[in-house]
Image (cartoon, rainbow, N blue to C red; front, side):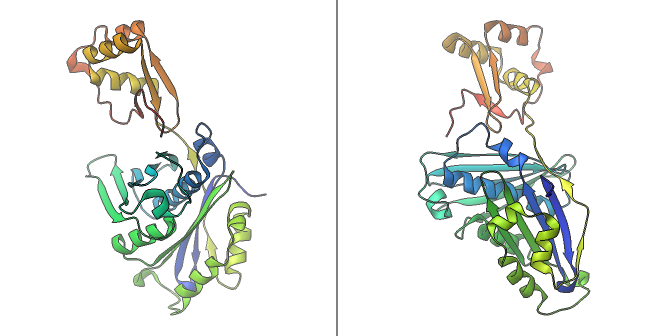
Length: 304
């Protein structure tokens, strides 16, 4: 029986290729449980969940990585974040349903993909931006790898109603190669292309790797857990309102009767009436305000 929500690292020693395989099950189901995404939007978002997890597996970092796509098409925003602990969350926002999951149809012709790496301490965020080119997200991210890491990289992504999955392979740097097979990279790429979407989403890791690389030498490492997790909380929304200031919050309550905050990532709801707002600001001085970054929502968010 296949393990659920796992990230698997492997090494194709005979090809001088390293790889990562991810299958998101409960993670993917939780990510879309509260929003009815149209089929093309859901397809691209699922690919982004798998792709962000694979991207994070190739980088050593202590913090979070954000994959973001903005465009002028029917889908105007897609964001997936993953931490070094492999906790992932994401969303997509659209003005109309795209005709297909093809990137130009979904995001328009002027879209950009941005990868941001944020370390927790003592480091400036790194940000890479490339045009959103190609028919699908896998092709677009291969361009990112080509321009940023300059390592030959291939991605294969698949999405069903219950699973978002993917495989990423990279050619090892020259100093890490051991077999020196000139045809190894091309052979590994062709072998991965034989994998069907159904196999990628349903077969267990051992079966998949045997199916692809049964004539190669493959070393498999311990699998790692991946889960859906949103960092929003009542404390964070409290801090966000404290950052707005009492006058602004009181104005919203007077106009609308209450303040409503819905997390953009998980749709958790936080409501504040006049009594809640008064209690929040009671005895709070401006010097005690806490940075509200990462609250996960804004007042009166309107979906897509």
